[in-house]
Length: 373
Image 1 (spheres, rainbow, N blue to C red):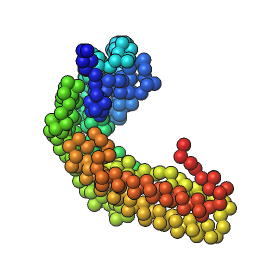
Image 2: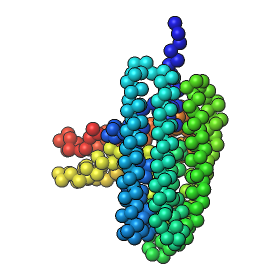
Image 3: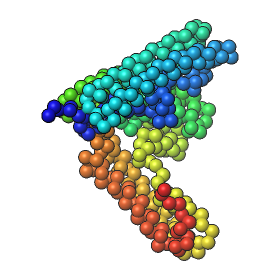
Image 4: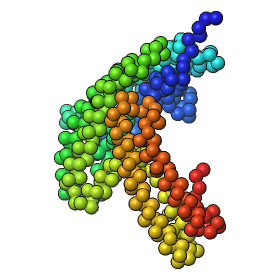
């Protein structure tokens, strides 16, 4: 019997992880365009306008150019979607390497065409600008690269944008002025690191197309190492400038800023789970007796203390795993005992708090607490 050359689940996982999926990568709500998106949204264009300071005529002209490019996008993406749906339907029950090659070829062709649309649109928009506005254009491009950085990120701290974090930090005018000097340096240094990281990641994504012919974990890890190192560079710049900005703030505000930075770096650690909501809801119940109030206050203190310890351990384990594992996101840490234990500790704490709440409250009171859907 002829070998059908099927794709193994392991190879499919690698493909999905590194952006070469055999299915559309965007929302199914965009099914008419196969999940493809215009590479430059109107919101992106508005941000350029704000940084470069478009006047009303320039803004209107830029939106007209965008509308024209949108028509071309719809034609290209619609055609790609139809071709890929036909491939998927043809191989519905028999997805082989040859089918993947065919599907992937359409995706690569389409992405190349969309990149051309983006370059053309940005070039035409720049032609609307004065020389003074053109001097501000690189700042807008750096901002856009930072906002897209998450598409190429593998490490938790790679996704942070300190310019956004500072805006939400409620700093005084003097503190903002000091931060602005640091942020100017940060933008330029980070941008250089992002460009290098993105280039290496794109090269690795191209390399992975060979994985459907022969999967070699050692080779993949070797080829990914420069990507990981470049990601560490982005991460370290974010961390260094966060510390520099915090050093310019009073102690209390510095601690608050660094905590906000941690939440941005490790959203899978510093998230408000069900136990948080349950504790808040329990404390807000109107028919609590004095004994219950006392027990809830003690439990809240215990929870906060234990949660900080559990989160610190989970952050440390996550950071160590991402920093030392060649393809850190491949198995999501499930192969690392320390990280698995830290995650279980956090989960067990949540369960313990919920159990203790059930013993403090009456059944009727407990039933009023929010539940996981």
